[in-house]
Length: 627
Image 1 (cartoon, rainbow, N blue to C red):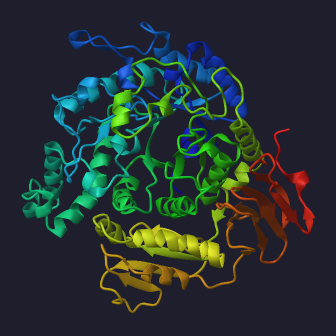
Image 2 (image 1 turned 120 degrees about the vertical axis):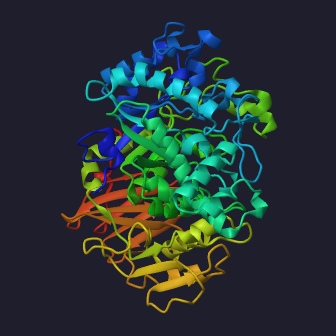
Image 3 (image 1 turned 180 degrees about the vertical axis):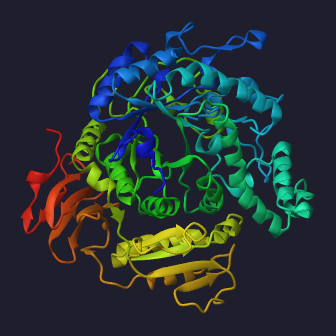
């Protein structure tokens, strides 16, 4: 079995681990030690933090230097912060960028990199990649790479090397951010096509014997033949992995290398889910551990967001590296105890070995180097008031040490993982059928600009199958899983291939044209794939259940209601039932038919509570509570 994030971050861990983000560059250093101790007491196992380049750089020109020890400002003493994390019993994940986003001006890059002296990141479609309306640089520009190397070598020498495990608490290093500059989930024709990027693409083509195609990489996109566009789809992930590899080699051996790959919206005019999938072949094939971030809506409130999480976590097979625990920009429920726990339980049930709390601590102490340019925000249609202190107002911990409502959910989850996390980690997701998907569909679909792509239809169909017929169709890539072994076989196996529609006469296979809408063919195929008896039923077909089974008879039952009305789920044999008010979830653990314990999203004021009935009786005494 491949290494997962929990064992990389906590060697020897037999349960999911909790990662808490701590934005020290926004917090008063006088609060660091107390904040870290309280996060540990709430259940955080690993503290993560970005390092903003622009914040740690001091001086100009030949006098330019870096401060990681607080010589010029106590808030820059990240080495001391790492020591405080160790004292609090936390391991550390360091994220030095170079681009970090994190709602920091220019994603933490110095102003000069976004000026006229450096080549901008410009897509094949001609659009610039910007931050606060300023062009971000191409990280393939040699002059930019030289500056990036200077920054990252300083981090390696002064921060990582002295604190790396096993002598220190730094167990992991994140490469880039959401790709390199938040570009893993952008449209395929928006990826960096600056002169240096096109040269890299041409070299990649030439190395594969495609000299004629390499000669055309400098042409306008409108003149590119379809074959060259497909090669760009395949190269788009390789380009990001190449930069990850380059960054990784600047650091000492020891800390595990991880990368965060955002989920992509499954709907929209730019086929971003297909671009995400096309890049995933190279990303998952890299030598680094891949996690995902979840900024694609709220699964506790939106069926579309739920479907996106379901389909892409199944296809991506990744752990959570970043999830919202308190940002309220467009959804106030993220500051309440229900929503973050709902989303964490969904990810765990789908197989994540980590829980991400971003951020674990609200903070409101920062200066102009961190503050985002208000005019630049307005130019991008963003109200600067959204970025006023405190940062992440609904985080479990306030900077002054008080608990916010989401702290209840974090503590509940930590208690549940302490008691039942090992059992959860030993289980496998139950599927009623499996579908192997030809990645060529995504590589062509990434260029589709009209109608629903095959992957978009597939994501919707898998969710509809679960919701309406109470059966889960598992998803994997055909190139990554050509067949199932005996241990993994759970039901019918289907294959979705790119080709002439109806060309395949093999039972259990269907071919659809790549790059054009499937017009229901995928949905129909998925609907006919799993026909066995369902494990559960729901009264109103709003809520859904997912189950996991372990070799010792342990079973996990995850129940989720991502709608605005109540529902009730009942086991097919009638042994259990769970009542789920709108936007709630529950996770139960049993063995050989006996309930061991369960957890549910907290009850909101003036609303009904989640209830679990087991063997005809309410199971309140086995519910995990914070008291």
